Image 1 (cartoon, rainbow, N blue to C red):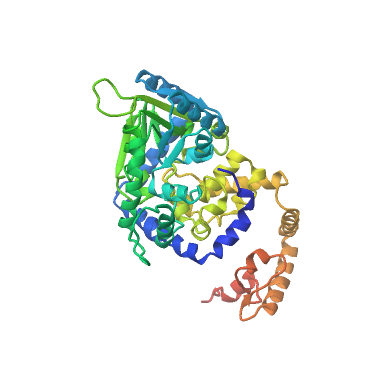
Image 2 (image 1 turned 135 degrees about the horizontal axis):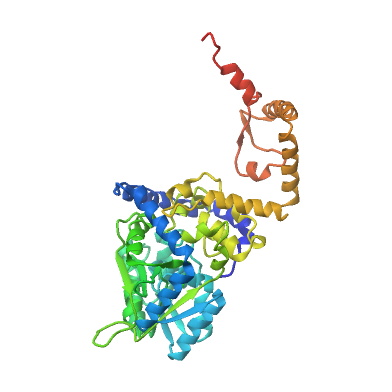
Length: 476
């Protein structure tokens, strides 16, 4: 997936002006936010479980090399071929090599954000392999000119039923249509299923992500709601699972603890509809499963976070709760962020993986309200990490000159209380005088705010003056 994060401001402006998108994004509050709150209330010991999950993730990360090697040994013992990739491009090359080794021409694939980092579909298509996305949302995006996902859990949440119906009508030309009729969701789901079922049966290689890999058993854990991961791992003769190196867990007990939080945080479900533990290729006497099983463990910048001030980000289990609750994401959607991971987690991960120079706006794309940290099942301090990225930008001179000059002036004044109080008294009186009906529709040096919204004008008094007026006397 080509990175476009440097165009964040322009993209965000376009999305804010898109009324249809604004309406579609309201589904976040009704579909995920409310459902998560209800699901968490069912856990009487939620905070205890969360603390335990964080402890277990931290323990795995502290000895990441040990547990990755343990996974490789156990997976290899059970017949899985474990491969390592330092970069996304190297991981894509490995998948292409596997396809060529087994003469694969048709592949089916489940939703995988790591594969988006790898631009895997394009690499396979270039090698002559037909790839079909089988997650319904990802399939919709694929037939829409390979549009990238806008959400890591619900990739097509930015589209409504009518848009998807029109896309199906354009693509599924052999289907009978009723003029002017917009099908209901079950009808469209069945239509997609009829197309995908044939692709499943023809598939020679199944490609999946991996929510976690388990060192104790050499297994890959997959969590889905549509069951397509079963068709991608049972039917084809070759299965390839791709995941980041941070996803290793030492034991099945660790997995069980985290699974109490993952579906609740992601979709508000107590459990996911489908949960698979994949261990090795088909054994003698077994009726299904792949003949050849591969796991690719990709670094892609992850090891650079180890031992540093952003290591806590590696606890992320990619549930999407932070973006579901983020007031910025709720208004601009995922495509504004310009790369694989949107929302608060993406505003930390993308600069960490791709470099601050290419992602100047992402650490600023937050109100720092703290909602993301509150709902994160792994207690990742996202606001603090965003502040650290902002500090790095400023220290390295990556912020605009005007912004740095303004902060330097503010810092000079703030360190001189008498001057600060005098200028504050003047400023609030001037702003009160130029305001109209208590609002400021235009303000020099603040066009980024007043260009899209009014600001409340001050009353003409500073806070200290207002507080002095309202403070009760000692006699009262």
